[in-house]
Image (cartoon, rainbow, N blue to C red; front, top):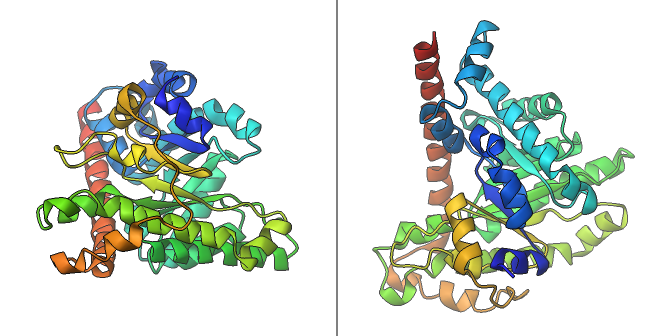
Length: 358
């Protein structure tokens, strides 16, 4: 039995962090679903940028959309929603079989809106309505300005993938926004069954300190942070506040481990999959990490509900000159900036491609 199947059977959802039109047309995604236990998909601007700029798979569609007078961001969302709608249909059976727990795809609002609450709310509602798929998450960043947008989107019935989370505190803020949205729905006489995931980024922690800490702490920070977030997740779903919502029909906002490709060439390429097995969570990974895990990965012990050794490990970093809390805040700011850069690169690629196709 492949490691991917073992991990799936242990209760963790494996999602692929990639989508291209060629992946859909060639049967690659179908293969991942059938043979590698993939039950969901995430996307981001960088993925689409590479797909559009480095291939001709979108040329015909871009020509057609240009004839309709579309360009830039508007043209991109047409392409993205078409791809994600096809993927959503492929995951529809697992979405139904798991009573809507699994089988999701994700579409990101413009990163240019990360610090604009009202614009994010409006765009999340627009994209969700336009896509018209029950198993599509709208990705909203868990920034200070994004949190009220998450609450409002959930209250409005928009399913949300909270992105750009880096710490247990970030996760708790996202969970609070989610529960506020559900509580408002209950108060308004609406169903609290509006799904969400909270995506915490892992590998960027280790990349940030890779050459700044002694070898004994190298590649330990990301998983320690993930364990602390997992403890916060388990405590949240065991809380009286959540239990009340669940008794009324709410369903947990699942914790999702993102950014799980290994950045250290000296480390195992499946490090963040082997080390983050946990039931009722999600691990989303790029193609190369998925294939590597299927080939030689291992399903180790499940994460401990109490966080295991995370506190002990995290307490060692200040002595090595790393302020973990400050680094988490820095990583979120840098992450938002990199998302904006990726978005601008994507729009530039669409403009370049459009000119070439005229």
